[in-house]
Length: 401
Image (tube, rainbow, N blue to C red; front, side, top):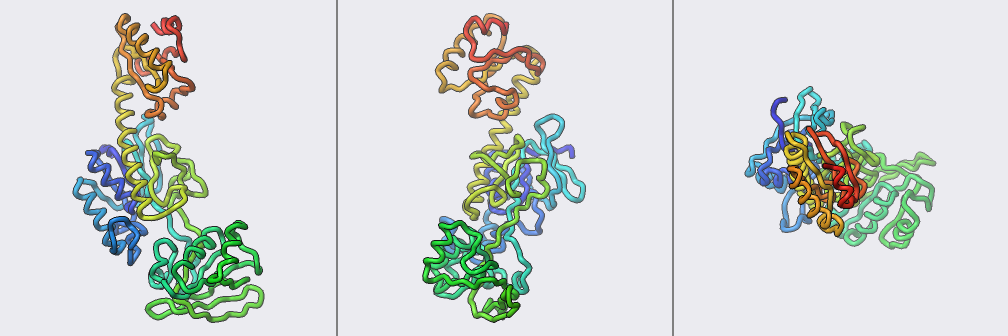
């Protein structure tokens, strides 16, 4: 546990590998912890991939191999491990990541890219025909069912919206709905769109009992929940839209979640300083390979800046032998600019050094000291805040000396 990584990435899918490329290229000591024998996440389980920009045609595994090769080029380390816990160390900076076998890793920052899995209902034939007629993403797979007849399982917003999208490609969509005729889980607007679409029909009060086929899906057995009658229907594919399950069990109580997904800001930062989220595990609108890769890039750059800011703060203020004046300011703020010239002049007269913190760029540090207004100046001694003044006048500044 003595080795401390700059960045530890949990998960080796598109988001994690993209983060690895950026971290490695940024000369950060980076480790990717992957629970599976093969990196690539959900994308590595996709047989055909046609919507990643610049890659006209490929397979998911082939694209993820390229991502991994790119990480290797920049010296990113890889290890197997299923993560069971994440916490902040006592120093308030280092993060500790524990795996199920008891190994503890230390890192200055962590990027969680553990993804989300489609909810599996456990229908007979569902796993057997996954990627062989059973699909979970219309945006990814619609083209492969062009001019064919398909079944959609589910009636929530995602199921209805994806069904409408699928009608641009397929010959027909039959939605299997648990509820009585006319009742769906989707909102009214989505329902109206589906009901008005000539290509969409409904099988009410029903569930799919079995997905049938030879090498590919060729039919389903459907059970009527009121009569118990089971009927057989020919189909070329089955799209399952019954939700996804994020892989975040180990984060309970560590970072803020929403329905199990990680809540992040525009820099992919979570509620724990120095911990970032990337990819399908985030609480977000679109879950695609390209958006996961984008998240990974943002998280990596944010992690790099977080580390630089924290190490600068520690070196310049917390470990300083002499007193420091820390000015929390914003260079775009007129009052901040006026204050800085006064502060530097007075500090020089008293033999003190001024450290500036841009509250927009260094939000973690500003929040740590509850900076509510700018400019705010705090005098530190041996890492402890002695006295502060907020939006000070020249006379008020004298109180710091």
